[in-house]
Amino acid sequence: LQACTYPGIIISGTMSSVKFYYPVYDNVTYNCSSDFVLHGQRTITCLEGGRWSGPVPSCLPKP
Image 1: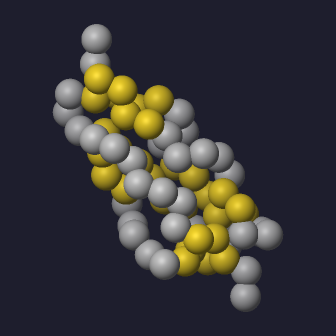
Image 2: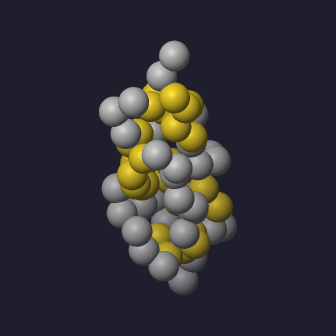
């Protein structure tokens, strides 16, 4: 069974689903709190081999 581990939390934001592992092709979507703006990919996908399509994004304070 190929799967990805928990990708990581986002500070000042939320993620669409929290699991111990994610099946291949499963997506995780991140959103930021109202006073913050997302920096990076909003959605990452679990790829074959158990790796994520990109790093966890970050929430930066709005200027």
